[in-house]
Image (tube, rainbow, N blue to C red; front, side):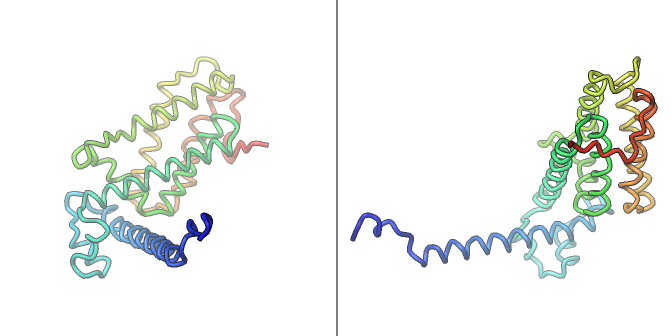
Length: 228
């Protein structure tokens, strides 16, 4: 047998690999479905009050089936938090790709976050769990306010260095105002269960706060800032 033939991959190995890939794909889809079911409860109920048995019941699954994908509530919470974190990574990545200025980037990010909150219940659950993470996921050291403050500060500092902001604008005070307004909007939307309004309202709050601070009070609303 030649050296080449002796190193050919046997058909049964290719078949086994393709079955393994399919099984992994189905497992991933099943896990995502379970996270969606869990999120429906976790957007309404504190994390500590939710059990695997409740999620199994919500999903219409026999006891023990959920544990095949998520053996503990912590693993479900971690899966939801990972999903929310990945959604934010994509939002920021898309904002940098689509927007050529830091102010346009902020508008893009706020509206995109609103779209995620409106359309993805797992993201909404992740935002809620993040607020409880100090007690249940201390190892993650999550601080949504600090994360957002860092991002907004970076964009406003770049905008000031570019000459996009009026002279004398206080960056730290502006960051606090933007975050406080964003959190207020989120709380109001959550209270009224009006998540479909999130994209418009998040875009409105950031543009109304920032527009008066720009050179010549530039109109930011609806400004995509897309790169040529």
